[in-house]
Image (cartoon, rainbow over all chains, first blue to last red; front, side):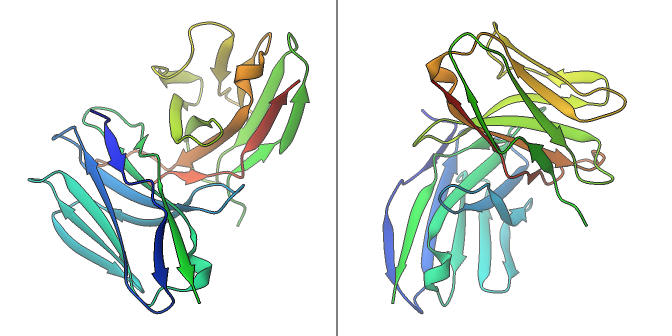
Length: 111
Length: 116
């Protein structure tokens, strides 16, 4: 079992729709969770961080964390073509400072 | 408001040569992390450093790779006797002083290493 799993996609959504990206993790003691966006050939850019169960909203983005089920998700409302990128889920396992990344979900938003 | 800086952005080496990658963290950040991204793969942790200390090198290959973060100057990731399999994007990230949960890591633009 991979430590952090994501569906590789591509996930295709029309402009204006809600994109839903999911991630599961194996270390039940993980405390910190991050979503990064990476455009092709570029570096990861932080979108959201979440530490507690529930929802956290920032503009068009909402991160959801469920520690009991060991999943974290990212919702993108009113998706725009500029949101087309690979979205990386990253988890901080217990007792470490490193991040474990999933392989990413490629999102395509078509006009 | 400079972010994480890495240089060079692109580096070409022939097999057997040495590669040196540099990373300057964001102002006020004292923690540096190196990650490697192989083509079509995810980011893999390599090493975590604070000034003059290697905190976690569990992701570093046992041979040919080394890292340092001296008291003065940038962090250096050094790859000796490079092989074609070392071709990848190497990203540096930095975070501020640790405060309970893992602080957010901010990534530099990366160094793309090509080994001929």
